[in-house]
Amino acid sequence: MNFRQFAFNNVKRNIRAYSAYFLSSSFAVMIFFIYAMFIFHPDMMKTEMGRRTQIGMGAAEYVVFIFSFLFVLYSISAFLKARKKEFGLLTILGSEGRQLKRLIFLENMIIGSLSIITGIVCGMVMSKAFLYFGAGVVGVKELPIYVPWKAIGLTTAAFLSLFLVISALTLFFIRQNRVIELLQGGMKPKPEPKVSIWLCLLSVGCFIGAFYLMKQPLSQSNMMYILALGLIATYFFFSQISVWTIRLCKRNRSFSWRGTNLLWVSEIGYKIKDNARIFFMITVVTAMSCTVIGIVLSMDQVNKRAFHENPFALTYAVINEKGENWKKEIDKIDQELKSANVKFEKIQQASIGSQFRETQDRYMPIMKQSEYQRLADKLNRKKIPILKPRETLVISHPSINKLDTKQLTLNDGGEVLQVIDQFVEKSIQGGSLLVVSDETYNQLKASRKEKEDVEISYLIPDWSNKELPNPNSPEVKIGKKLIDLHDQATTPGEESGFFSSRAGSYLMGKQNSSMLVFIGVFLAAIFSLSAASFLYFKLFTDLNQDQHIIHGLSKVGLSSKEMKRSATIQIAALFFIPMLVAALEAIIGLEALKGTFADLGNTFLPTMTGIGAFFFMQFIYFLIVRAHYLNQLKRVMV
Image (cartoon, rainbow, N blue to C red; front, side, top):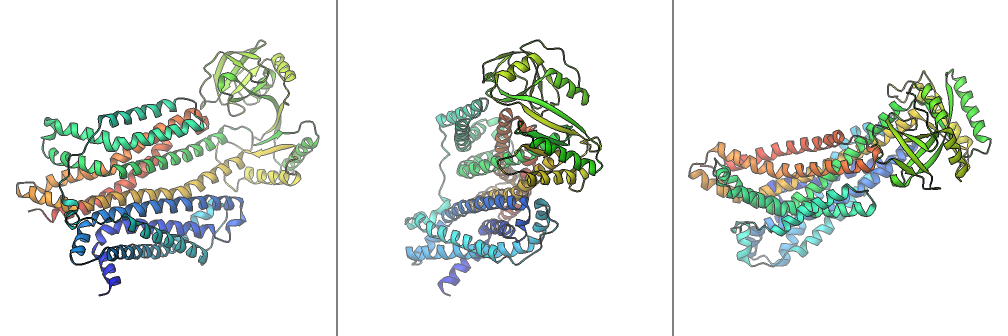
């Protein structure tokens, strides 16, 4: 048997430990290959959404590759620690240091090569379904299967380089330990996990600091501080606070001496301490994934709400009011609608865009009372009281918090408006709107350098906003035609106005959400599977020691039922404690973002959807790992 055969047989013998790592690596290769296949598809450039999806998937490729690099690097370093006893035996049998390094290098390359082949083959098998769903995202009827030589070449080159570099890097991690240390491996008695009360307090302080900053106006620097404090707090939560909590449970005799509690309480402290870094990584990745999913689903809700609440099917915002081109463009729109036998009512509205010192420069348009009342009558909105000079009425959308001030000071000019009342109602202009008397409006208009904002809106009774449109509805088709005519008639940089379609804006938002979900689902699957692989490997690294403990306890009366209960609690803690922490961080983080970005709308349900999806996947992995692990422990019971 030559050296290569010896390395290959080594991989086969350790297949139980390597299996989760191999499957996770293969899955990452498969997703990378499918994304590359999608990016290089010849039909992707036919639509604007196809080009945007290419960019999004290109970014996702980098995320997959970087995550795969860190995952493989950490996994291999953990494998080396778990195989100390094996290396000790090989050293006794005469293996030299350079031979051990060569053996490890060959094993890594064997697993890496098999992962690449398996990932590409599985990617080819899954490509038809992926292209089928992808066609709907990019807006084409079909994305036919093709021979993806570029995707195969890119995937092979990228991951072969990854495994080569990491295999070379791991050689520097191998230290020349004494043979006795290698032979003892993980069987040396572990000291009780140490806990520092100061680090526990630091973790609590960082959590409090991050929460406090979330309540402040979010800036780029604040976001960085929140992220840094959150990372520090999360790491020390697992390495210190959780271990300290377990120690308190152990000291509480009424709890720890009940049934088999002492068995799992004694062991779980070591497992949490040993796996603190893994828990930290899983929590951070899961929290970020759930947050992104929550944002995407929240924005999708906002997009649907914006369509339902917008009474105007078409809107033309005038940019250059002095010229006559915008009037000609309005005439063209009228002609197209008439030729399509579409009945419409045209409504012109004017406002002044303003920012105020008391609202952190938030943009709020000002409209005169006569103009607002005319629009309110058309849309069956309630009448407002007659306003006096310098008085204002604030009309806010239900998703936007009421103003916590009785006066507003304009940034430009310093004029002060007294807030007499605030209405929560579906605003005509989408966000908050200020209504002032005609006299005040004319004074503000005369004192400002900026022009008045003019919009021409089309109220079309036949195009209802009660039901969401589809690509074949008349509103979408005619709206798209009008937008195309507008784009053809205008020169970039010389536009007289901006034309938008309610249905077109909705479909664009829906496509963007679908694209992000389409890309994000596979990334989330990689993160989830990799997290389960970490935990699977760590459990089976400690399996021999756990079998030794269970074997001894079974001799003194430990039943199979008691063993299952104790092991299940320990495995569940490893799988679900990071999930619970990540869920809390995602919910709190999005609630903080919601306070700053009102456009997010209701974030709780979308975030819980993302958390629920992760929890479901983790639960499936938990059942599989638990069944396999309990089966191994049963074998050693007397």
